Amino acid sequence: MAHDPAPSGNTSLLDRLFMHFRSLHASDSFLLKTVLIVLFAFVAWLFISESTKHQVAVPAYGGSLTEGVVGTPRFINPVLAVTRADKDMTALVYDGIMKLGPSGELVPDLARSMTLSNDGLTYAVTLRDNVTFHDNTPLTAEDVFFTISKIQDPGLNSPLRASFENVRVELLSPYELNFILPEPYAPFAESLTFGVLPKHIWKDASNEEFPFSQYNSEPVGTGPYRVAEIKRDTSGIPEAYQLTAFTDYHRTIPNIETLTLRFYTNESQLLEAFSAGEIDSFAGVDQSLIDELLAGDNAHHVEEIPLPRTFALFFNQNKSVALRDLSVRRALDAAIDRAALVEAVLGGYGAPLTTPLPPGFGLEQESTSATTEDGTPLDRAHVILEDGGWKLNVDSGLWEKEIDKDIVVLSFSIATANTPVFTETAHFLQTEWEKLGVPVTIKQFEQSDLTQAVIRPREYEALLFGTDLGRTLDFYAFWHSSERNDPGLNVALYANITTDAALEKLRTETDEAVHKEALVTFIDEVDAEVPALFLYSPKLLYVFPTKVANGAFAGVAEPSERFASVAAWSINTDSVWPFFKE
Image (cartoon, rainbow, N blue to C red; front, side, top):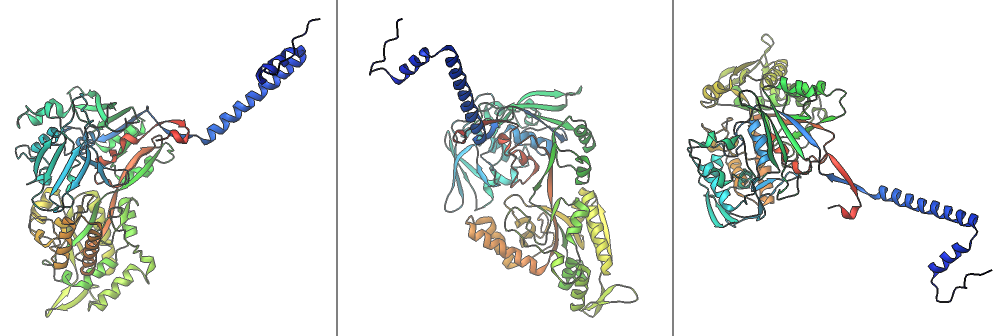
């Protein structure tokens, strides 16, 4: 019988192994192959199992989100946008030189860099050279210059015009330009978040034609989303915009492929649409409707977004002898249970305030909860009034004090707007202070009447009023002594030399330490003199689907900025090894 030749010394280990397989009996060979297959399958399973354990989820392209908005967009144009619907659409379709970053700070967007001169007057901007509009036309400094010229044009009456009054723009190169201010203004960078128009589309539109251009409803920008389809009603009014991710976006392509905004006439229609599953998200609806709407709903949650807005009661001491008394103002302040106020008026969706500073935008306030002090708020208020020389008249039940040889009775009126939040707040204060023995009369006005007949001529004893400070917390218009008269908004008619100096520093100084010191000085002075009672800071309530990841809402100054990080939002995910993750 012939035999296979014996392996030579030069035969490889693999060759000898195969030769050994061929020499085995059929049954032994089958058994060995089976063992090897099982071993290979086990090793493969072990590799896949361990690989899965160590992989991480990363956002992937795809998916769709439908959001509901109250109102109808008319000017999807950064120069003219004024309504909530206008601004929401503009935020998605256009980009600014600067934008809100994920941590709430301003970061370059269309700008590659921005530097400020030592004198605080010149902002030198270098634009990115890889940005295109949705029609694939490159963006240059000419587009920025053109947009500013339209904002500054008095014939267009842009709502942004005041931010660029007396600001000069210099074109240096296709991607470089300077913004030159007449005087230092630290919050100016905030103004550079305006969306940039494409000059090649808008340059031939006269002022008369500008508001009626089709591009106000069919916008072309550089933003993360472009208009793909417009659904209109029989009158041609837009009912919905379907936006798709701009695949040539100068940053990372947005993860969510399709974003649709549907528009509704009022809150009731929007809520019906949400209940019917027509929309996934919405923002800015009355807080009293939120909890009931989401009861048992695990597919959504509420993002509570702090806003740089405060509600306060401002005293006009020129109109009330009693309110000139510091002990009165301190007693009224002490009598307010702010936690109960926030619960009653905002359903708990707000932050109690005891200073002008809203939470989340600067120095955080220490808790001033009434539970940390002895007695109830009313007990403390009684003590403050008694220590201030006020006596409770047993017969009338009112507080009295002799001031300048006259007996002054402690009572006053509150003027405010005729809207639900102001109505509920005013009645809460009225109820609490009447328990203290201080009668309060509430006078409500429609907004236009309040402005013209009450605020402008300063015809009020106390004014329940809201302030919008912006992300940089510009208190100047509300508290500097130069703003006491109309059209200034210093409705407390407050004048303090130390405070004025601090407010001027807040406007001009960019050094963080100096800025913080000035802010502390301002807050301490106002706290000592009590020209107003700070009540609460509301939150923007954003009903948001749990299917969407990576939402970031820090530093939002107005509702449309909830879309600042929209390109990072994601619905779909992929799994990758950690070293493949960006």
